[in-house]
Image 1 (cartoon, rainbow over the protein chains, first blue to last red):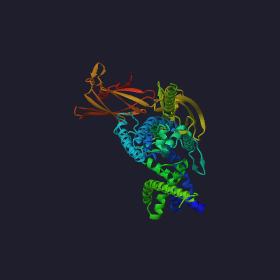
Image 2: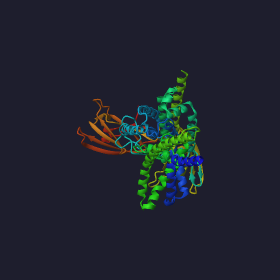
Image 3: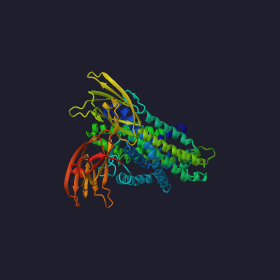
Image 4: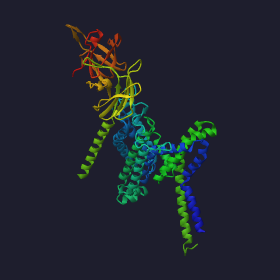
Length: 375
Length: 236
């Protein structure tokens, strides 16, 4: 009897834990036939999008380990990356050297922004997500001020292709022609007509290995301890504030590299917009993959990117088939990404309550079954 | 102490790497031209058809300039050391003659002009900086004992794109400004203005620069008075 009950509990727990990916899987199963898109096309799209977004989504994992939830502040790293790209485009640097030079230029800025965000988040313990979200808006304002008014006027930018005709400020869109797919095509490979961005996947694999290794290091263990209970970690001699700052710095630096990978794949940079949706879409993808604000893994990142972007690709076409208008699908995919975050956060709270209920129930069962217990 | 040394070495290493990446990744645009080249009175004529391969990249075919064809191609390259292979082709695309040459580029040079007839004949200046610095002066110009005075305020437009505003020397003004132009054929538009920036007189002239010339000096009073020697090579 108790075995049956525990089996039921396990099934229920599986569905509760994986509610979002299951929901998306069901959506994909229904929408793919409606979209009339070929499997080859979908595979090619998923490979491109995995290469494009993996680094950014993986950048979210370390703050989760440290118990800081989803780092909406990855947009800070994205902005740093874009500043690096503006400089390499101004200097007319081409190809892979441009990619690595952009990383070197933007990294100190990413470290600084991450450090600043880490300090701010230490002052807002327990409300890290909303704080990092608002911090993103604040730094976005500073970024726009610098890029729109200082570049070309105070910061020397001379390339007429990126500076506005008035002589200062950066153009709204920068063609990254010198950089486009330079990393993706460094090791050329084509399977069945599908281009595989081997080098980008190697970089993503290196990051995955780094994350696995990092979790085993002392700092990684400290982060986990801080994530589980800050007070216990502090009593154990772990510098809690410093550890949390480091988590955000690492995440911001990885996001900076991720944004450069993302933009070299796209080939065009919207100076004032490219970074804005990055935090939202990366977090949505991770949550779709079954992660929660308290627990996220590499597996969640990849599953999430595939499921979320299947929805992105098929939604407009499915919308067209269903409603006769592709625009409906466009709206759909935008509101769905926001809805996922809301659902995932609500589910996280609900799941926590359920887990507490499970724990209470199992404790009650144990107490009832324990010999010599009076009724 | 040891930690600081390691950190300093790491920072220096990153800076060195950044400089290295800057040098190897810097784009240089090479305009390969199959045009007439003149130096020291010698004229080298263009070929009917040439195939040019720069640094083992995609070869480009350039025909002799005819009609609207300029007889040139734009090739992009990176790094400081380059190798160019030129093949002279006949009507059936058979190679009649070929020659390989090496050249170096300074990192600050963005555009180069590579002349094929000059290269095939080992003429000096077959590869030159395509960016020309034009120094424009609004200073007195003396010829045959007569001095032409500078104007109060002039606006100069180089190649219909770069605008320079030059006042008469004195009161903190040098009476000189400079701009960068690319290529060999240029235009110069001059507006003589009063204090209220009302245009009193204007003039447009065209001029050609030689391959090897990179710095030129233009005198405004000389241009406005059609005097010989308004365009000379600039000396520091």
